[in-house]
Image (cartoon, rainbow, N blue to C red):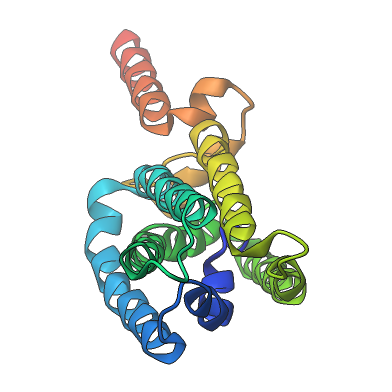
Amino acid sequence: FQQFSGINVVMYYSPIIFEHVGLPALISTAVVGVINFLSTFIAIYVIDKYGRKFLMMVGAVGMVISLFTAGALIYVVDVSTNIGVGITVVGLVCLFVSIFACSWGPCVRVVAIEIFPLRLRGKADNVTTFVNWLGVFVVAQFTPLLLEPKFLNVQGVLFVMGGFCTLAFFFVLFLVPETKGISLESIGVLFLRSGWLQITQPMTYLRQEFIAYLRCRFAV
């Protein structure tokens, strides 16, 4: 979901998007790059404070709101002649980039490394990186076609991106465990059993396991 959220659509084809709303492409593209760079530093501070799962869920909600709002404005208003709405759309796109850089950008890479057992972590990282770049390739190949007016146009692409971000939210909500505060050795326990509690509420599961251990020791 990281690549299909549409971040590379914005990073690669932002000149087309900004020209569509009647704003200088190069200046807007530079602003997007700076925002992406600076927002990454925020992620360094908050990722261990609030947790990976929380950041990805909040990030997905923020990206959905910004993408659907921008798409709706382009669909409803002729942004090429309304500079105020055009600036609003650019602001929403920049907000999307900032939210991604604070959440899905770093968190996905961290979680992708943490969830694998130590003996498989190196190979698994290679596989996840390959799949990630495969997603980049697919997005780069199909986006120019989808941006054509006879297909989805800019607003349609933004709606598709928002749809993928919506799916990403529910994927994280139901299937991604929180790994904050759990040692690399203990994370493997989350995937040894198929119980719903162990997968969706790892801290509750580990706490119950610890209480059960203390009871056994006390009984002995």
